[in-house]
Image (cartoon, rainbow, N blue to C red; front, side, top):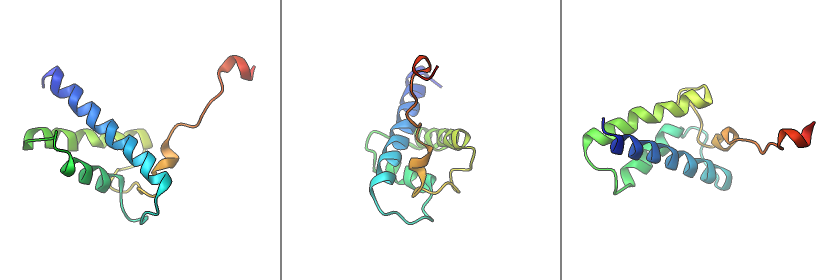
Length: 96
C-alpha cells in the first residue's frame, strides 16, 4: 500500500470517529446503531472515497477503533460513543 493511501485511510478513519464523537454528544440516537453502522454510512456519503480497493481498506482500518475501545465496532453503541473520548487531564506538574 502506498504512503499516500495509508495517510488517506488514516485520515478518513479518524475523521469519521471524530464526527461520531461529536454527533453522539448532541443528538438523540438509537442505542442499537453501532459505530460501524455510522462510519460505513459516512464512507458511503464521502465523495473522496472511491473504488472498492480503498473502501475495503477503510472498512478494515475502521476495526482499529474497536481496539481503542476494547470492543467490536459492530457492537459498540453509537449513542454512547462520546464516552470513548479522552477526558481532559491536568498537566502532571499541576497535580503534584
